[in-house]
Amino acid sequence: MAAPGLFAGGSLVFIWAFTELGTPLMFDYTRVTAVQIYDGIKDIGDNPLPYALVTFMMITSILIYAAGKFLFGRQSAAMLGKSAGAAETRRLTGGPAWLASGLFLLVFLAAALPHLGVILTSFSRGWYQSALPSAWTLGHYREALGHALTLPSIKNSLYYATLALTLDMVLGVAIAYLVVRGNFRGRGLLDLLAMLPLAVPGIVLAFGYIAISQPGRLFAAFNPANNPTLLLIIAYAVRRLPYVVRSVTAGLQQTAEALEESAQNLGASTWHTLRRITLPLISANLIAGGLFAFSFAMLEVSDSLMLAQKQAFFPITKALYELFQILGTGRYVAAALGVWAMLFLTVTILAANSLLGRKLGALFRI
Image 1: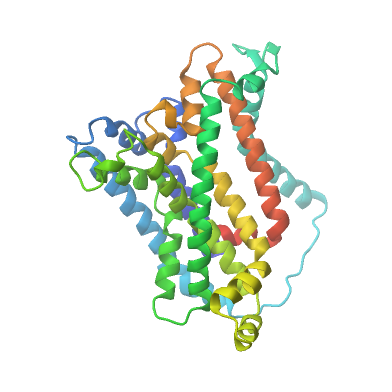
Image 2 (image 1 turned 90 degrees about the horizontal axis):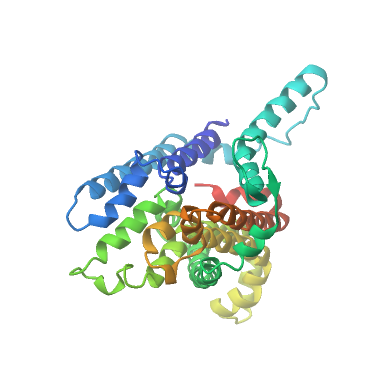
């Protein structure tokens, strides 16, 4: 019974790990597909290798996504149609309880080690050949919010993410409404297309935008080498659209359609019903999906690293990467900026969780 969930989670982990760009770049490890594609931007007009790598990455990701749908899609739907009753819980005691707690603690510590390293680095004046930093400071946090690279990047990210969120809200509500309330063929296909950005890597989308905007091509006017603003907004919106669609879909499915029908029977138009009845009822879902879309757009990695090529247009993640390359205090300031980003994301997740509760996992269902 757990196979669909295990495969869906495993496939997302594989796709995100396979297409990860930020981590190998920070470690200066170039022998992975994502970094090879990133380096291929420099001679994209003459070198066919990055095109081949992008095609391979895209096909691999889509095949894994399609395999999950084919193998477990019907099985999952069939199980949802059966009521298994309330699940019984059993409190572990003695040895089994200690074993389960120890295993959980081990996994948690392994997952938290990188975050702990970033936090310690952000407070460090210097850290060399010792278990802990030799001296401590709060100065890096002040510098992280006042550095010549970070202030414009925060402003840029707020601008990009806000416009991307606006697009996501409009498209997300429209798509979710058509999928849940519509009565036409192709609703399943529309839902599938809306969720594809979870399976198609961001680096693939970013490379595609760069490829179609090269000099002499149809969209050359939007070449990110000149000004990446429009492409960054579109990329952020496309990448985070699934969160809004899933959140709004869950809200619509839990809202009685009879309320909308009653309003329409009294003469209200579809738009008036949506604005005065439906949207207020699903406001918690809208806010939660919007929080996720906005926060993850603010901290988007692959699209930012690929598309932002001039310092004036750097978003936060590109500025963080550039800070890390600066000799001296660069990596410490970058770590402090990373901690600010972690705090922002933590607050966002807690806020979304308070609004959606157990339904939060629906945002990641593919």
